[in-house]
Length: 425
Image (cartoon, rainbow, N blue to C red):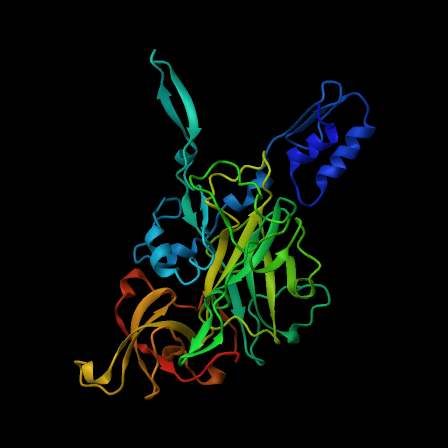
């Protein structure tokens, strides 16, 4: 019979080490039955130990504003299911192939999605089989804010320990639940994965993932996460880690300096996130990212030992939250097609460019005769957002950002124009 300490630890499966605490308590409590915390049960006489998943273990399944729905001209109702596969494969393909197997969160929005399959045996007796695997792809919208030196912050908070507001130029924020059930939370950056070509010169090489960066794909998905076979140990996950071992301050200087756990509420978010709270990553003035217009994602790696139920996720870690992060005047995109001046049918000067902005291919002009090539990331000026500086005393937030829709695909956008600048060389 395995030692009861090991049973408890394996059942709990928490990288934060709570299994050891429980095992020590078992040793000292004598031969009796104990209910440790809701869902946990031990009996030292019978050598039985059980642990059931709790609501707090599954907080990432309690979803909020779906980033994917912003790009539908006729978005589904909040509690509807919708197949976002085409948008994910067509519009977010700049980084998905770089991290093979990575998939967004699949969550449940309708009670009917919890219903098990009902089948009959040869005698006509009905019985229940596996729960339905019909979750909806969901990427919780990252809220963000950025500002210039003389602009005011619209949604301030206390910040991390030793916070100096003048040292920061923006933040990213996303809903989180109880710590201890998520082993790793990390930031994924599109430009860091896809590289950055500007006018044919490779300034930032394309990322080549190693074993520790590659998500474990699970097809077909199951109710429990995959084991960590093939990886060296805890905390493997691509990106800049904001949390490790179930704690929000890993032994990483930048995370300690820039991460605020349980920040103030954000007004004008699409919906109330209670009972969750906000986690903020503050963007330091020394940061050379985000590149305006790049996709920023939050990867979540739950603890991966049963009975932690994660409800048929398709990769570990998975993409939990994200957004295209622009500034008031600037975004960027990838050139997908060049129409030479002599091939244009509108008698206008200069080349015409198809550019993927926010994952949607649109057609825009360039400000001059500098030539761009397919695959170049180009800086794009948002003409409508360009106003005299004094007109905008406040910051730029995720609510100010215009989202391209599926109906924008292939359309010419006269209020966007390529300009010959580069970011963070």
